[in-house]
Length: 333
Image 1 (cartoon, rainbow, N blue to C red):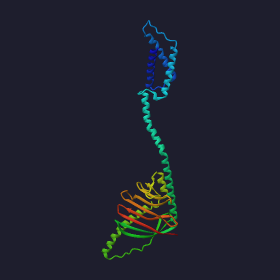
Image 2 (cartoon, rainbow, N blue to C red):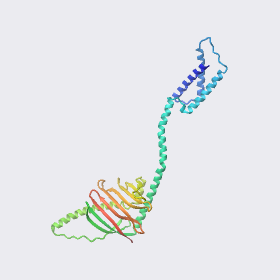
Image 3 (cartoon, helix red, strand yellow):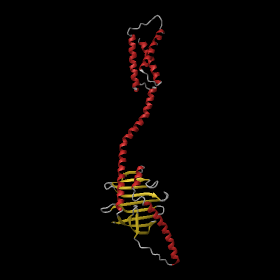
Image 4 (spheres, rainbow, N blue to C red):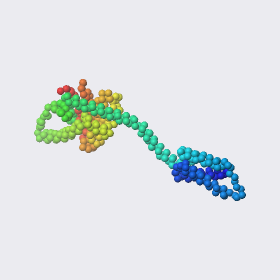
């Protein structure tokens, strides 16, 4: 009986190994039929025995065989429900190992994304709030400045040498653009002789050329200063605004890319408590990026009134032209 049971168990193990290789999930009824089929083969084993020595089966053999089949069936069901119990190196084991190796990085990525979801969301909400605050502040300042008039001093330098200085009385027009009235006396047109007139003509032509270029630069910068509410909103919707700390405590900066032109950059430094602009820098260009223009501006508050541009420096890099502007003497109209 012991030898028969060993042969039966070996055949049963080979049968289940074949089932695992074919990646089939056996059902209890199918396993039982296979086992019972193996049990029927026992008759062939008995026929192969030498004749004359018939082996007597104990009365409990049939019952013991059924218990063995039942026990092995239960173990088999448990082994399929628990993949870890599969034999080492089996095809199913290798397939599960490959599946776990490919799934684990994905699960780690999902967990990592979930972990960073809250900080990113919090940063997005903070950026949205900061942009809304600066949009409101610039719009209010622009509206309040329309009730004021002030003096503006403009100094134009070429290659570090001052060429011209102008003074204007300024106010904002109905369109929000500065309207300027010159406060300087007309230039004298005295000339002595033909040589003097020729030299003056050359100088005037050169001055007119640079004056035209300076006017173009100032017209460009007026589209940046002060920042427009609509353009700030467009930049935010495009994801072109980055929030970061500023150098001084209590301040932060908004770095805006592609604000007006592709490749330009404008940095706003904001007082976090007052929610007002402290300074501003711009890196832009005229018709092509090779004709770069850099701007820096400082803001101040009118006593009991809005903030304004107190000083501004425009640097036309290619022509080494610098335009410095100072604003003062603000009066309510």
